[in-house]
Image (cartoon, rainbow, N blue to C red; front, side, top):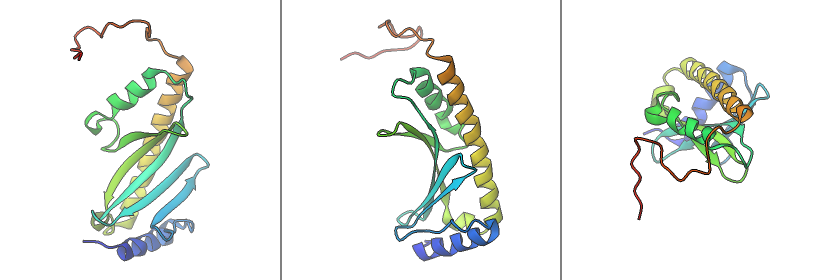
Length: 159
């Protein structure tokens, strides 16, 4: 199993190859970097599993965001079909949509350049989702919030 020292060494190599000097773990193992003045990209080593959690702030939602935004995020994440196996969460205080993905340190440590290429592809995925979210927010909510009727074909369980 990989250790925190392995993680620190891995990010030393990532810094060297990427030439991004700010990719430096702090005392807790958190790496945070701002990319293209668009995304806060973070990495945290989870020593119990040997995994690296990558989490990227994608978009901030207004408090009154339409349910269509949430529906799209949930349906896009079904089985990871539109999220490359990652998943979205919502930071409740700021209403920030966060994309999360786990990397296996022992796997990514074998090819730093592939890891960097994967992060670049992940940022492209975040671009797509940020545009998608923005489009839904611009369009507004076209659903009928006054209806208590479930959509046709859906089963509703009531207590």
